[in-house]
Image (cartoon, rainbow, N blue to C red):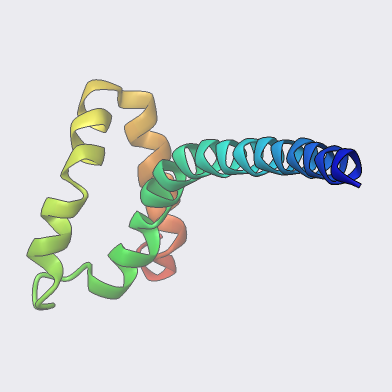
Length: 97
């Protein structure tokens, strides 16, 4: 009877290790997805934010200018990227086209 309990305990430990490895790999996948997806969503959010708060009468205009300053820095260094981003922003502002 003592050996049987030891064997079932050892089997449970192996199952727990497999579950822990699976949880760890799932967490790693979510971390990678978040690290890739969050910057993409940050850049893509500039269009809707510009449409909602893009005029300087909005109280959120100046905080958003600061929030999106890194995007401006990157596009200042890369004119093709700036052109693409301006076209994307214009998609959100049909009255300016």
